[in-house]
Image (cartoon, rainbow, N blue to C red; front, side, top):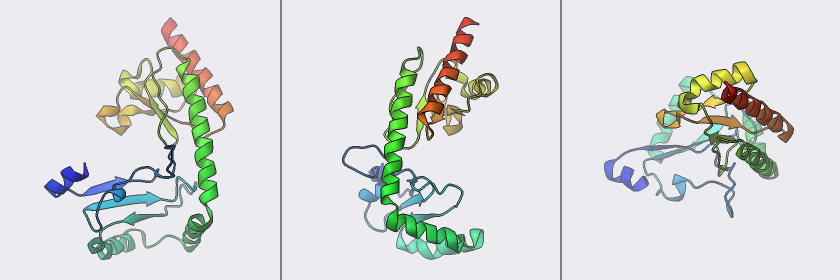
Length: 205
């Protein structure tokens, strides 16, 4: 992809906010365009404190971008958001300096929850699910997901389950749903049982 964009002068804006929530062997972060790109290439990497350090809603993050963009990016931030509150900035400093153990513990917990949920879902007929390489979501297919939005509405109404429809992530996502597993395994088990009953009811109908 990088070579293609180089040939055609295309900018890459890479959303890397989940880079530290990575389960790959031998690495603490997911692969990045920054591993391949030369300095000041047409690559902008976007990152955030909200995922690895659970600072969601604090709206603190950073960009890695070519030097020639920095002055204009500074103006863009100044006139759009002014600045992040000082206490949020200080929290970010603490996260960077002292938060590695927390981030790695979070990754271990998420991986265990994800593996637990995958195993439980694989026991339900018609569900096609695979373990992810990171983050905190399963993106999987199940009967009735050909219209994922309608299916998700039914799941909320009839089973009390809140999934994201695959269609929300583009036309390629149709046929899938997304389940966030950043919670206690007991809640995941309860959700799986609700899903099982929902699918059994639809099958009987």
